[in-house]
Length: 177
Ligand SMILES: [Zn+2]
Image (cartoon, rainbow, N blue to C red):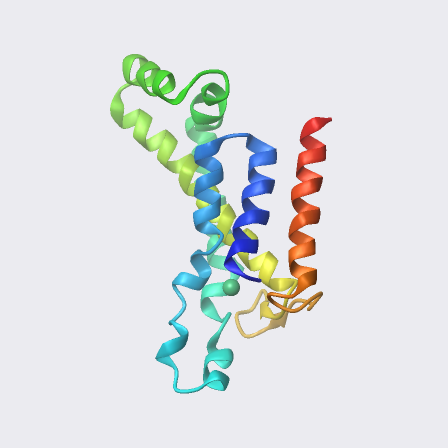
């Protein structure tokens, strides 16, 4: 899947679920991360060697999932899920919510709680990337050497962009209801 498709699908779904711009941006950044940390294509001498190394360890869902579970436990443990960004952001504006929290809570608390929530959505974005790659080819399975995934359509094909449009429309319609 092209980066633009990863960003559009992930961003639309997270926006639909949270209507929160910061968490949406965090997930969009995460949605291309597994490709960034991959050795760049030009580091390989030929296309075959590149394809052979593409979507390996960087696209193994296990580390992202384990990290997301730990961060979630932290978010639940500290109560960050109901206190900051999600709760106040939508009713008020950014400036208000920052001032509100600087006033009522100490800065460390503000940074830790919001930071973990943003980190969680970054990891969710990484997991979305891997799932999205899993419908356009093979990705590592539970064991890093396993190969799972189906190829519903070719990367960069008209079908891929149609899938993006379908997701965007679905999110839009769900949000209207
Ligand atoms: Zn990828």
